[in-house]
Amino acid sequence: MTTPSEKLAKSLEALRNLQEQGNIAIQARNLSRTHRERLIKNGFLQEVMKGWYIPSSGDKTPGESTAWYTSYWVFCSTYLNKRFGHNWCLSPEQSLSLHAGNWTVPKQLFVRSPKGNNKITPLPHHTSFFDARYAMPNKSDIKILENLRVFSLPSSLVTCSSKFFLQNPTDTRTALSLIRDASEVLDLLLAKGHTTIAGRLAGAFRSIGRTRIADEIIKTMSSAGYETREINPFEDTPPINLLSREHSPYVNRLKIMWQEMRLEVLKYFPKIPKHPTNTQLYLKQVKDIYLTDAYNSLSIEGYRVNHNLIQHVRAGKWDPDSNENDKKHIDALAARGYWQAFNSVEKSIGKVLRGVNPGNVFDDDHRDWYREMFAAYVTAGILKPTDLAGYRRNPVYIRHSMHVPPNVNALCDLMLTLGDLLREETDAAVRVVLGHFFFVYIHPYSDGNGRMGRFLMNVMLAAGGYPWLVIPIEERKKYMTTLEEASTHQNIVPFCKFLAELIKQGRN
Image (cartoon, rainbow, N blue to C red; front, side, top):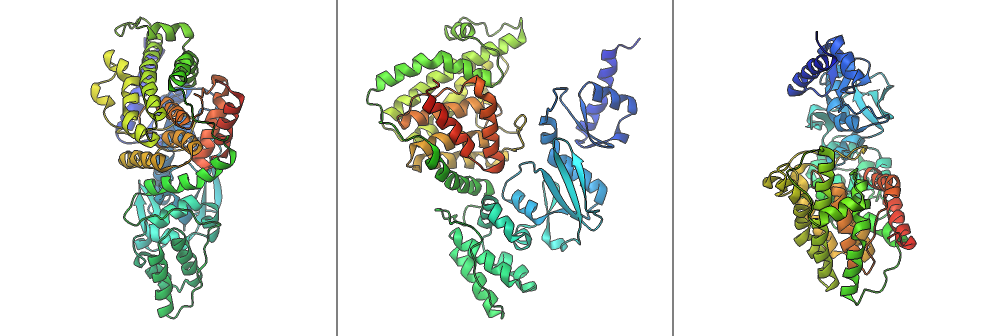
């Protein structure tokens, strides 16, 4: 007689076969009713809409959104291709955001198609499609981006609304920075005599320091007989020139966000205290706080640790070959790794207290922190030594987050840029808040990014004369919520206020 476990195993095998064929968006007809119902019951298949499903992890926690956010863009491309064939594309506004490297899951995805029915299709976790009945742009104005049909970059800049420039300055400026020559947009502007749009684009290019492109648009439109009035569509002009030789949307986006967010940090973060003169006393205080910091930091990441375990592994009383209880073994490895990384961070703090540029310290040392954090996993045979070399090699998704971290191909450039921004930043408070935020925003490693971000934050705190800051486990929800707000809506204020309040309270 076949047991329930054996039946489930057969259903999982059927699901695995579909996934190995590249299926993320799964139609009902791809699985038998028996397999489908069994997989749904056990949390391995999640319904998106009638007749469509996505694989899940088996986590049946109410409100669990990770499977949906992880599958979102692949599901969208598969479903839309199935429904509309090649006769669809995303809106110019959504297209522009994707060109700008913003893959955050939107609350509502606007889709254009001559077959659209002008209706909203509800999707999981308060997301939706809106398919509008629109004629398609010319084939030359459509580009395939990660299997999604989008407006080309020049076409999206010309076609998107003026309101989008005002409401989404980061995405728009990043997209503008990718245009290398005025000829990329002039054909579209001249074809239909878009004088108002030409004036808006000229003003937008000038606002990011691309005066040559702005002048060329105005001169060319004028020579063609079109009177064009230049208007800056943004409310302010960022103190940054985006050089045309940089063709990475992710790097330019990072630079723009840093400049926009630093102004908010300066408003809300506490004044810098006097830099500590007694380096040995400061380092002693860091050592004294280790137990509290390790407990809270590891607990935030979901590890079950207590002071006894932390003390136990700090003293080296652990067996890397023990597997009597896998969960306890992993917790012990995490605690040991935290202790070794903490010691490495102490050395970095010693450097910044001696006056070494904190950006240089980050550049030189953060890989050491990471290797120490996971060295115990190599000793235990869970990871290979090569796993600790460089940054992640695969896409990564953050649990419960709509933010999609940057493409792996952009990581090296982004981390170099983050080091440059920290090195060039003149305000310690900005380095503290944005250093932590942008590290977890980039998410350069497959694991440990939160712990690394908090280590980075505390090195920057030391460089500014602030004491070590512990993020309490009781504040985890608020901590994660404020980081999510900054990642998905580019609103750094709640996170900045959160850290500022902890410092004022002396929660360490």
